[in-house]
Image 1 (cartoon, rainbow, N blue to C red):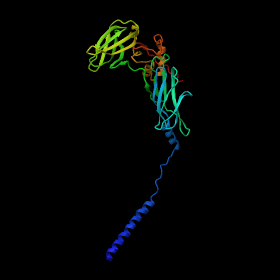
Image 2: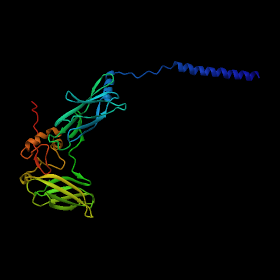
Image 3: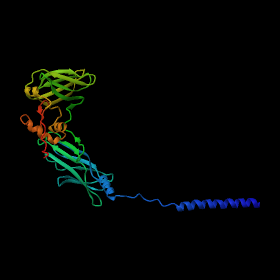
Image 4: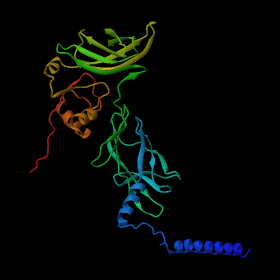
Length: 320
């Protein structure tokens, strides 16, 4: 009995000793230290980037009325700016989103919009991106809206230069062959007939292939100048399922003959901005094309598919 009691006491004492060792070990561990911020300025910059207001949606109608939405730090005041002028402002919701509807239409021409957010603690943060809106003076079509940042790639938020479309019927290109014939090409439902007219007169008929592509080469005499183009898509039953109507210009035959690498044929949906952006890398260079073709561009906001423009090399600044 004495032996059993001694064994129990020994085990009890040993257990206490072991627990004591673990307790002392836990007490001897150094407390967990927070991470050291070596450069507080970097944290401020990172916070500013996260809090900076940003554009998500910019929609501008023909008249210049705009709906603009984006994100910023929750509870901040977001102001839409042009130059030093505030156009409108709103407060950011709890989820970081905001939206504005401009009561006054934007003016014609090219304007640059940016945002300034004022946080709850009074810090003002400017948006990293700007939005360029190009509104035609004639206000007869949707404005071009481009999101851009200094030194960064631009992104088109609203493109007025989309290809003419009616349902499945699309006019993609207008070109000329070496004999001066006009080549129309586009998309339609596979197997459907496509009929092309100019000023109500039949130019020709063709059929979309199994991939939905169609091409029509017109040898019919079409006088130089602007004409009304009509394209019909006709189902096998004979029903006209889609109609496209748009102006196009039959180019001067001499311009067609002289067309080379230094020329461009205006395509459906093109604008001077888009052509300049593709050829020169900047839409703002559209004035170079306009100046070189002033004899046939009546209005820089109105160019027609089928026109042939000379494309000069833009002047560069004198490095000296």
